[in-house]
Image (cartoon, rainbow, N blue to C red; front, side, top):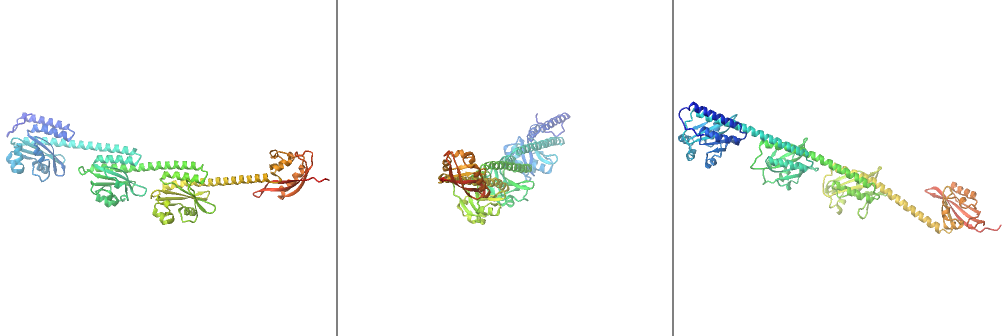
Length: 634
């Protein structure tokens, strides 16, 4: 298309129709533009030819009252550099058109020099002989279009109407592009938040939650950040840091207060809300912002953001960040609950395995070893078992061959107090141990420990001792830790009771074996014949002298009565003597005449001493001592 020559008369009807057709075609092309860049390209290429301009510049408001050159055609690099950004005080036609909302028409160099003397030299160098600046107005002023012509222009009513029509179509197209861009950005924001929400809902650990949140916050414009959650002791503990120094944020003494604002901008404001958190931030670093994490009104932690100086977070980005951080808070709470359930399941499994192992413990040392091994589940440095004996003394049950330590129940020690009072003791710091048990705090064995839990060992209502659980560092012993110690202590007490019973049975067996050995030795070494009968008058034991005297092997006696073994003796007389001793509990002396297989057909005489055999005060049998006497001739 060839630019039209200026004319002081009205165009012909054909020229007007041609312009209307071209204006309509421009409108159709602009209707299909969906981005600001598309609009600018169409206006600069087709609008330039339509109005016969040498150069076109498009200015849009980027900041309040500040115009930015976003596109141009036909302008020199010097001109673009000089007018890339123009403020409200600049004396250029575009600023006046934007500020007043009225077009500026400068028909020749004289009018340009008269109204804008500072720009006259540049206009002459550029070859400009006429200028026109028209505001871009829709619901409000949004910018201005500048037109430059190589020849003077009359700017009559028809030409002005044409230029203003082109400008109006440009404004409408730019507004459509703006709305499209807003819709696109909104869709992207919603999609991004939905994706992040979906990922956060699937995260099962605090580290996964923090990684997702920081990735999205950095994509929104933050330089870096850190996620901290409130630990069991109430301090802020670092979950994850990206793009910022996390070492100083590893543990912060106190979380932000409950009434802290949702968005805390600047290090000074953060320091006011939480001095400890503000002190952990690098004062020479990037601008800081902090957002507390809240779940059901409870302060669960904080997200700290390092902001990019060159890319400030706009209102939309800040709102998105707040929404994302709230999702992060919910996800961290879910991760905390999941982790608590996982730890609880692990601890219950450890309690069950410990109880199963304790069911096979036969000694107190076995109990101590199993109890110590179970405490790794809560990060403890083992366990110490103290057993209470019948003399009210506490014995430290050794592990690994260590020596036993015995001390009275009134000793000023942690275990002794637990046994005396029957109440558990929880000490979270060395200072607490020194305050309550200074003598024990001075024990070198306690130097590498920082917290202690001690519970009584109770079985069938009886206190059997104490279980002490030391931790390698100072820490708050929370409810879960206390419950675990108590759950382990219960089967430990039962196992200790069984171990005592096993030990008692073992001692009884040893004593029985010793007594039987002594009895065997006495029977074997006795210079007289001996026999023991049960309550049914059956032989239970005979010695070698009686075996020789009767002429019957010892094994043939056992389980049989004298009448069955020795039919040559007066069985009824022997039975009467046996019953007399059994019923009266008194010893008797007697004489028996008869014969035995040792000397068949020969009458013999024996003097007998019958005596009761008692166990625990009860008569369990009868013994007899036999001495053979010479038979006197009658």
